[in-house]
Length: 354
Ligand SMILES: Nc1ncnc2c1ncn2[C@@H]1O[C@H](COP(=O)(O)OP(=O)(O)O)[C@@H](O)[C@H]1O
Ligand SMILES: [Mg+2]
Image (tube, rainbow, N blue to C red):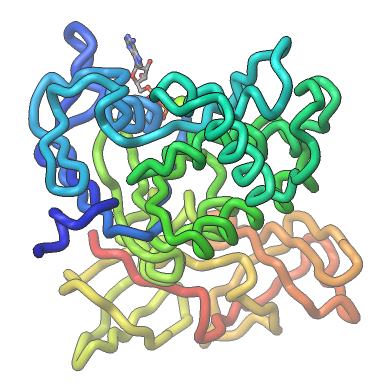
């Protein structure tokens, strides 16, 4: 069996979505392997929810095909697709007990009352809410309500679980906890999950693969590490983590290593696509160190310095722009207006063609 026909696999085949004259999704091609958690990541309005809703059958594509577990589901209604969705708002029925909320979908697929109640209890146990079945949703915390929503989707044993910004109603500390729980559950039970978020840190933390959408197109897809360490564009470099993007000269390129120059600074680093005479460097704020200005450095002048306990944040004005630098050398805070030379560490610098 090929990958695209295994249960839990998903394939978008030239999928397009137009709303009137506006194209929300331009010819999307994407394969999702069974048992993986794939995140659709991108700024607000890039098309994440539209893509998820097309997969769920809540929105009809205006072109292309969607295949789930080898079956073309493009024309099938939502309830025949074998997917279930966890919404941002949880969408629990407030007047129904937690147990009845989880059993609701099972009842509507024809399970007996007893069978549904048993499976619901098992679902609640899976998400760590054993014994909460008799409560009302309002008697649970936000994090617990979201776990109920996950249990309700999981008990249907869908081929694919869809989650649209599932943590956005939770406070920052709880977001970290619940995202870890969702990831653990997904890995333990081995289901396929498509997870939507606009938060790059959340995406890095939970995903096997991240698909970054930008204005209805895939900007880059890869593992968290690939996206962070090998950004294909300035957009990705700045969206995944934070980066200073500056122009550089390419002095040479040989056997996967490129030699570049920016100001007086020369640096050697890996490259993955052929480069022209000039390119851009994406420099993470913590990939730079400050030293005395010299002919071998990228020289600049300190515009601001903020002592933050375990590091100092600087803005340094240079010939290629103002750079944001995070320096762990707190014992020696540079004063404002002083001249400095910027050096580069090996890690945290990537060259981007163009
Ligand atoms: N029903 C609709 N009618 C018209 N435009 C829509 C509709 N749904 C979404 N859009 C537009 O499609 C684009 C992508 O929306 P959406 O998928 O919700 O983005 P995201 O979830 O990434 O924030 C946006 O520009 C949005 O305004
Ligand atoms: Mg959305």
